[in-house]
Image 1: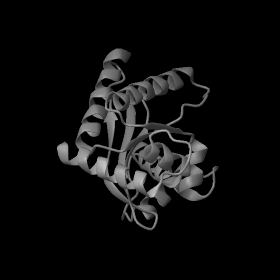
Image 2: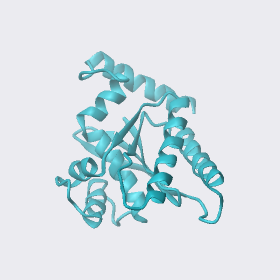
Image 3: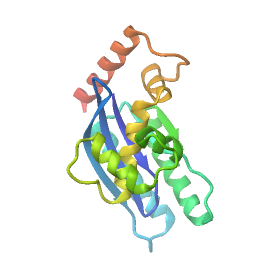
Length: 190
């Protein structure tokens, strides 16, 4: 399975693509950050981020998109921008028929480090270790996007959504084979 993890942000939107491998291993495919200029109007900034996300979706053809769930923050302006970018990402995935899953920051931390209270440096170090990288991905938004992708691959709910397209149980071996064939066909046609 291939997952595009997205750490939504209006100034920096982290993007990370990971593939699952046998034995609960994960492989880095691509990582980066979509940026927009703070002095531009919000509509233009959302269009910039959206265009970059569209490129990533077309280039990497993920089986699922994992987005950080927006949570209440003290800064209303920040949470609004994050929510708007999340909406742009979800709409782009929906237009392509790609399932989207939302994961809370504590879910991601717990999946990657074993603790829902881990700090950013711990998450970054574990992402580097899991992906067998010699350095921690920078900036933090990029590492967070990879952590979202890893979380989605490792959490049972994420696998069911991507394999069963919204089913309520584990995919059968036939469904799993079909999902792998469908993903390979989508990648071959891109």
